[in-house]
Image 1 (cartoon, each protein chain N blue to C red):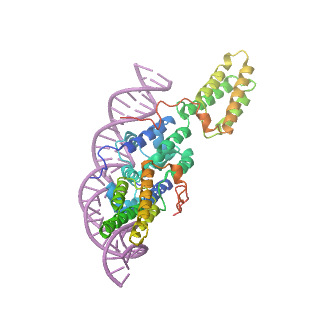
Image 2: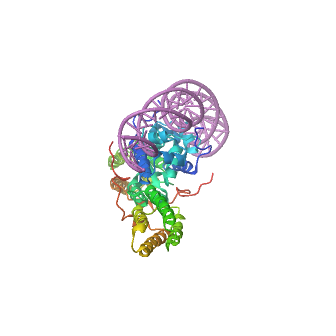
Image 3: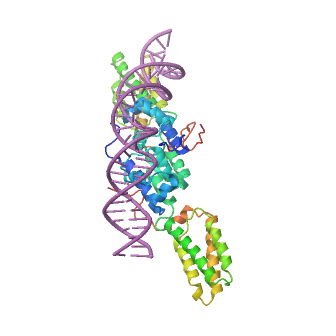
Length: 205
Length: 205
DNA sequence: CTGCATGATGTCGAATAATATATCAATTAT
DNA sequence: ATAATTGATATATTATTCGACATCATGCAG
C-alpha cells in the first residue's frame, strides 16, 4: 500500500490550506497560478483540496510563485514561526489583482481624456507622473486609493475647477511614488485589516 | 515530462539536507528512523540524497519523527525563521544515541554492583532512583553527565568512602530528574556548542 | 583481523501523481 | 439576460514514487 495514510494528516492539510490562502490573498486564480508555474489548473485544485499527495517539487513550484518557501521547522518553534509568517504576509483583503485592475483603468481613463480634452493643461503631466508609478514592479498599492484617483480623472469633463482637480490627482500620485520608493516596513502592514482566517487558525474540516 | 526539473531545485535540496542534518543531530541511523516511521531505509537514503522527488506525506512522516514540521513560510520571513529554528534545535554534538548507550551501561553497572556487593547500603536506592530516569521518553540528557555517574558507580568497589560516592550519584540522578521534569528552555540550548553546519549555511554540493 | 552496522544502489511490481483535455455548475462581470 | 471566469471533476495515458528485498563498500568496535 503506497498511501502513507488513507486520509491526509493534519500537517499536509495545513500546507494545502496555506497554499490556497496565500493564492487568494494575492488575488490570483488557479488558472493564473498555473500559467506562472506550469502546474496544470486541475492539479492545483486537487493539491489545494488535499485530494492528492503532491510531490515536493510541485509544492515548491507553487510556493515560489507565491513568494513563499517550504521549510522544515522544529516543532517547538512552530508557534513563533507562525507569528513571524503572519507579519511577513503581504496585502490580504485588498488584493494585488485589484490594484492591477485599477492601474489599467487609470491608463484607459488618461487615454480617453487625451482624446476628449487634448488642450487641457496638466494632462501630459498627469500621464508622465502616472507612468512613473508603472515602473514599480511590486504593486502593493491600496486599490481604494487608486480608485479615488481614477474617479477624480473620470469626473474632469464635468468639473468646474479642472486645474484644482488635476493638482489633487498629481499630489496623490506623487504621494504613492514616495511611498513605494521608501518600502514600508512590516510593522506598517500590521495596521491593515486582518484576514478572516490566518495561518495559525485552527481550521477543522 | 513529469519531473518538474531534471535536477532538484535549491529548495528541495535544502529540505533534503535539513532532514539528514536533523537525523544525524539526534544520533539516529537511517535504519532506526525507518523503524520509527515505516519509511524503508533505502527510501530514506534516496530522500536525503535528493535522488527522488518524495511525496508530501513521506516528508511529513520523517519530519514528525524528528520533532519537526513542514511549513510554508513567506520568503521575506525565511532568515528570521532560520534563526528561530537554529535556537530550537535539540542536542547536536552530544547525541541521543550516546545518551541511550550510557543509560544502558549504567543499568549494567548497577546489576554488576548488586551481584558483587549485595550488602552495600544505598544500592537499592540508586537503582530505584535510576529507574525513575528511565521513565522519561525524551532522553535529552547530556551523555557526559551520565558517563560521570557511571564511572562513579564503576569505581565503588575501590572507593574508601562508598557512602559518600553513592550519595553524590544519587544527587546527580535527582538533579537530572528535576531537569527533565521541568523541560529546559531553548535559551539554555544556546550554551551548547553549535554544529559544524547549520540550516542557514550555504551548502554547495 | 574479524564482525557488525551503516549508507548507498539495484531490481521489480504496484500504486499514485502528473499531464492533457474536456466539461460542468456556480459565480461574477457586462 | 448573457458572456466570461472560476474551481472542481472525469478520463486516458505516462512517469515516477514507494515498498520489498538483496547486496555492496566502507568504517568502526572489539
